[in-house]
Amino acid sequence: MQTEPVIETRGLTREYPLGSSVVRALTDVDLRVQAGEFVALVGASGSGKTTLLALLGCLDIPTRGTYHLDGLAVENLSLDELAQIRNRRIGFVFQSFNLLDGLTAVDNVALPLRYRGMALADRRRKAMTLLERVGLGDRGEHRPSELSGGQRQRVAVARALVGDPALLLADEPTGNLDSKSGQDILALFNELHADGRTLVLVTHDPGVANRAGRRVRLEDGRVISDDGA
Image 1 (cartoon, helix red, strand yellow):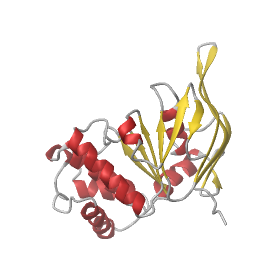
Image 2 (cartoon, rainbow, N blue to C red):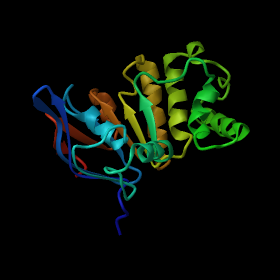
Image 3 (cartoon, rainbow, N blue to C red):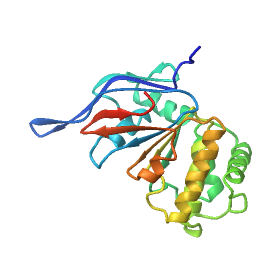
Image 4 (cartoon, one colour):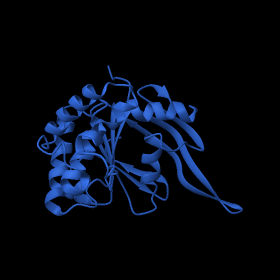
């Protein structure tokens, strides 16, 4: 019997006011992602893929439509409730890493656990375990400025995983990396997928998209193809 999907959207639409008119960035998106899938959202710039990722990550709210994350309806939650969802159920990896320069790698990774009230020693211990998982066990006390781009992205991946999220979202995760570092990050994503993680990433790179098991193509805010549907 098929299990409940991690992601289920119906009629997901996002509009933005622009003067006296409205810009529709996303229109009537129906999407189901099962646990353990690795999905790439692809399309040209302006196709709606980053808007969709923001909605899936509860960084934005839809104008219309429904979104269930692990069976929970999130489209009508308060801002505080959405923040809790982001902290406990979703891990994010951004193109620009989004690390805090004033913190060491281990403290960057541990930061989401601070908002859960976990004791300092416990959250640092868990953060170090994740840094070891991504091959940076010897870089825990280094600051982002002392790390290469690929190493910083590995720290970002460890931070995304530290809360044991149901869903890992990545927005152009190799976009600021050289070819070798990009391949290393994609190999890490493949390992996470093999471990049963659910991953959704945005990319414009066909080579990156082909690493995923499923590709969903957007154009003008609509899904025009889905090779896993």
